[in-house]
Amino acid sequence: MAGPIIGFMRPTDYLPLRRVTADSGTASAGPAMTTLKSVVARLALVLRCAGIAYVVVQVAIWHSFYTAGPWRLAGPVVATAWAAAVAAHLRRRWPAPRFACMDSAVYVGLALSSQGCVPPAVRDHAFSWLVISMSSQLIVPAWYAPGALCVLLALASPAAYWIGAEQMTGTDTKTMTSAAILLVMVAGVHIYGRRQLYRRAAAADAALDEADRAASEQYVILSRNIERREHERLLHDTVLNTLTAFARAGRDDAAEVAGRCQQDVALMEALLSDRGDLEVGAGRAHGDLVGGVRAVTAEMRTRGLRVHAEIAGDEAPAVPAPVAAAISNAVREALSNVAAHAGTGEAWVEVSAVGGPRGAAAAPGRRRVTVRDRGTGFDLAHVDRTRLGLRRSVAERMADCGGHASIWSAPGQGTAVCLSWPAPAEAGQAALAGRILAQESLS
Image (cartoon, helix red, strand yellow):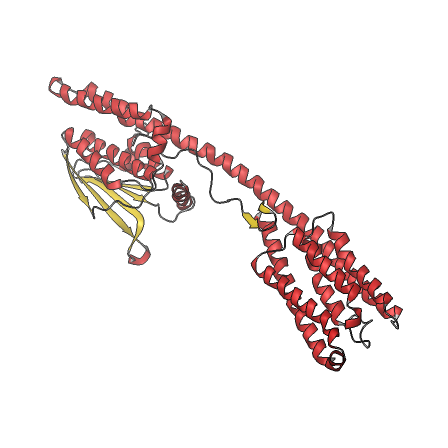
């Protein structure tokens, strides 16, 4: 329980996004680039399916041409089968560079060899099934081919179409050239869009990485400050309180003071021991809050304070180990204040679950610990600012671990200290509690 409240940790709000592809292994991509590629892959899937439907419709319209020579169905069948395979691939992941090159090779082959499979009446026109299929295919090489090849592959299909149409007899040069120009324009739009949007996505990911690094540095500083403050609190809770008790003790209290000194020595030795051993203990997924509170109450009973513990259930509460240590240390300080200042030898400690909003059932991990007495009490408005017990060892300690401490007291009516975790939904506190939970789950 003497270990650091929060050790070195990396913020978990911005975890790097990684994607695994079958061809390229593990590749790193930021969220902006990943989203952009996923959206383009979905658009490519829609275009490819539309191309398949268009091929089927044209074959149905020109069925007399294809029934006259069944071999003419070879081109539409190959185009439809390959488009279906690409669509199935796009449903699972975006294309790898090698797959984009293969896709372009298939359509270059179709453009060079399938002109005879197009009805002569529409062979030179931009609405033939071959031109429509090729225009729906250009998005894949333009967006997913390597940067050095995307322009070459995107323009290879229009060039292959023009060469294949030129070799056919009876073609209209003007309409054939218009169809080729249309394919070039489609390829140019995709290439321009790729350059602009990829540049912006890369800039967004770079800005996010920079923010991630800045957040990491700030969180390291925060963690070190929290650890330093916890060390200061432990010095106050042990050495300073024991020296104060030693100064006030009489001859009959020598044995009690000696026992407190032994306990403080054991606590400080644990704090100054091997850091690795502390992190092994602090890295547990959950801390035994009930066991920690019971150990503190037993320790205070040895000092002569009658402590009545009321625990709702004996199961271990689902709270992180650093939080359990912080609450236990805060309970120790609250009971020490009762023994030193309340003028009574009796206190009550209650551990209970905190219900959700509007009286909902208690949520796992939401706990409240209350320490109260019927002593002299005090006026909160007139507490000396130099006194650090309640302000730093209780209130600040709970705030550092994402919890909340509230104190009620009145002269002659006793004192009640309520420790709750997580803190109420206030700015900053709930987020810190969530980070501690995420860090413990990652450990």
